[in-house]
Length: 122
Image 1: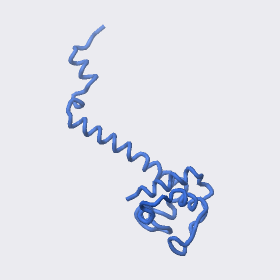
Image 2 (image 1 turned 30 degrees about the vertical axis):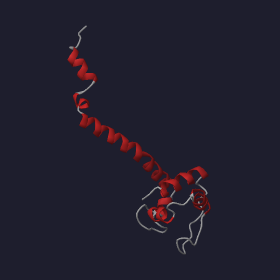
Image 3 (image 1 turned 90 degrees about the vertical axis):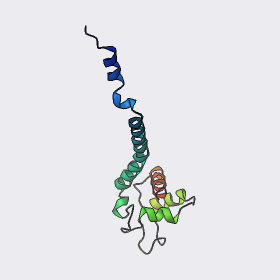
Image 4 (image 1 turned 180 degrees about the vertical axis):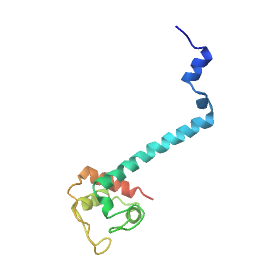
């Protein structure tokens, strides 16, 4: 049975690039960014799955207001429950003459997730 020299074994278990603090910090920042971005992407995927993106976009008005405009309008207000209900049952008048139709395919939990995602936009 062949054995590796002690230095070779150490290098296999702890590669040189991890010994460099700059690389460690970069790796940490990358992993932290991925952890933060994952829920955002997941909630955007939910918005697409539930057909919200047919009438809304993050940055611009489509048929309904942009998500950023909604977040700006309700900034600092406790409106998650109110907007979740509106998302499921529909509404009109808040953003103009075009009503938002009801979305019976969206559960209460999904509606709250979507509203929290929308309100988190800056």
